Image 1 (cartoon, rainbow, N blue to C red):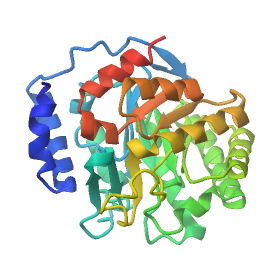
Image 2: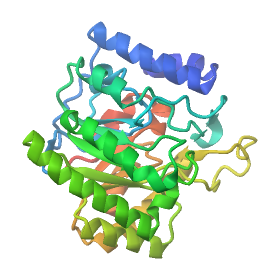
Image 3: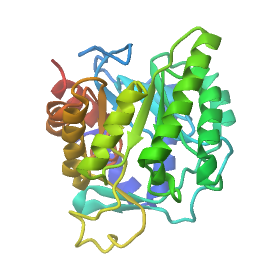
Image 4: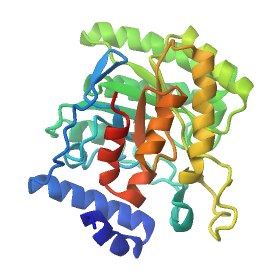
Length: 337
């Protein structure tokens, strides 16, 4: 039995969000005591977005929103980490409770609402971490910023995150910020991507380095929407796409008493839907930019399936809650060449 299997019953006896916070604290403490994964992190290096990834398995945004456990998380064997979503100003997120475990289905429903300490607090933390691996910073808009001014929030975060990030992920797909997914529509997306690429060029000249941009999209898209997004990604020369965020659907959890809770569904039931989006994206993009897969990866077999569907890298989150750190090594092995 793994160490995580021993402590999981205790964690699962707690409120989901409280357990989340406690786990991050334990990861940070473990790092300070020198506990690190014995697994090699460079088992399958990959050049993606111009960056050399030591392996294809990363941590998805959402687990460490404020970058409080980066050094500890880096010791679990990940090839890259993504922190956030972070917004220009601190915000508390939605009222609690706002995170729910659906244990039988190995799923999570959350309506966190971009709760975070803000981009300035994240910058301060990043200045103190020892981690020098690939770090993605996931950016979003504040809940009270009108949707017609959302671009301003993304540009502000881009300016402040740029010097500290290996790549920047643009989150326009969370279902828990009002009207956010509207930014995936053609005209809004075109305006946002155009503004981001223009600012990226200016920042690259200012800082003397090019920091790639990745767009994170929802799984609740039809084929026409996916094709339109793919066209926009190519037209604006976005560096990567992250597929996918959580779903508003409840396929696979209909029998759960928690299925009626508002929020995005992640975990095992999301696997098929998110993988279908990857297949459609891969066909529409024809290899012009890489796909980073996230959604329902609870085993090495599923991580490999994401690559077979057209992804280049994978990210974990909900699977870690149910499987623990051993999932990282399992996925590294499964995604090796």
